[in-house]
Structure formats: C-alpha cells, structure tokens
Length: 258
Figure 1 (cartoon, rainbow, N blue to C red):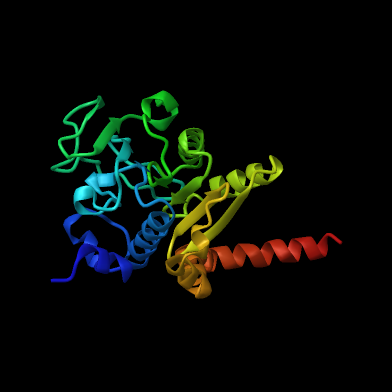
Figure 2: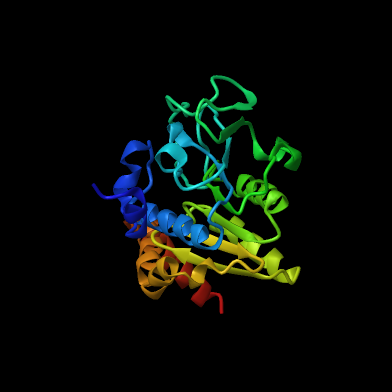
C-alpha cells in the first residue's frame, strides 16, 4: 500500500476524497504543494484555516500534515461574496472535528482547535500557537478578506505563508493587501497557483523555491488562463445585443460631440 508521505510527494489529490470540499482538482494540487513546501521548511508546523463552507476544509484527513493546526470557522445562513450572484446555500458544520455550537472549544479530533466566529472579532490571543501557514477561504467579500488577512498577519510567526482561495473573486482585496505590503516596505513575495490559489510569503519563507511550488510556477499559464476563463460569463453577458447597441450609440454621440 502506498504511504501517505508518498501520496503527498506526488500531490495525489485523492487524499481529499475523505474530506468534504468544493475545490477544483488544480486547487487541491496547489494546496497540497503549499503544505508539502511548508513541511520541507518546518517539519512540525502550525496551520490556521479560515472558513469551512458546507463543512468543507483543506486539511487532509486525520490532520496528518500538521502538528497542531487551528481553524477559524465562520458559519452563517448564507455565504455572501463579490460576485453578481452570490451563493445562498446554507453553511453547515461537518459531521466530525467540529464544535456543535458557538464559542471556542477543543475539537473531538486530536490536535484540532475550532473557533466559531468572525475573524474581525477573534483576538490574536485566542490563537495559542503562531501559525506558519494560513489558509483563507471564508466569506468571499473584500471586507472579510482584509479582516482575515489582518488576523493571519497578526498571529503569524515572524515568517510564514498566507494562502487565499478563489482569487478571481476577491482580487480587489488582494490588490489592496499587496499595495499595503509594498508601501510598508515589508519583505514578501506574492504569486498565483493553479487555478485560483494566491500565495503571499512574509519574511524569509521561500516555499516558492521548493520543487513542488517551483514546478507549478513554471507552467503559470494554467492559473492565468483559468482566471481569464472565469470572466467569460460576464463578457458573454455584456456582448448581448442591447449592450452592443448601447456602446455603438455612445460611441456615435461622443464622436458627434467633438
């Protein structure tokens, strides 16, 4: 039987078969690559995950990648996001590894601590161990992502990585975060991984130099084209006849006014 370590080394996404998740196969591969890369730098590392839509999570079964890990879960009646048609599917807790109601408490799963709440109301003191790797996949609004990043950067060790999912949705928040890091002259690297995973390395934490991440960055067309493809429904919508007619009329009016 193939060992878990061997499956992880080849980024075998079937590792997620035991986990409720809505992520695409390329996203799963990128998340595994990030965890494999962090594991190479910090063999026994702490992991913080924000968000668990419908009980989904990116932590592989039994927490075999991290020692220990933490989870900040924001369960609400629906999941608003920046898209025109936000998801309204109720979020529900998973069947295991979760507290049954609000409040911070020890999970039934060994090594996993769950916090049920909004990251804007979670204080850094509630995160007992400084994480080396953070994963943000909570409410897909720019405001929430900024708050999630604020918490992660506050509790992160002096160096580490913060990973975001669905970058094609929360890109305005990512632009603002990167601009602020640049303005503050912080030491960081930022890049996209297939399909919609965005990574920010803070301090001296070069997971991009590990073979798993370097291979994904070499073929960066995969994530780039996926991001372009995600905007195609909006392009098709704005190219409908009424919008084309409106653009022609506007162009003629502007030309006539010169």
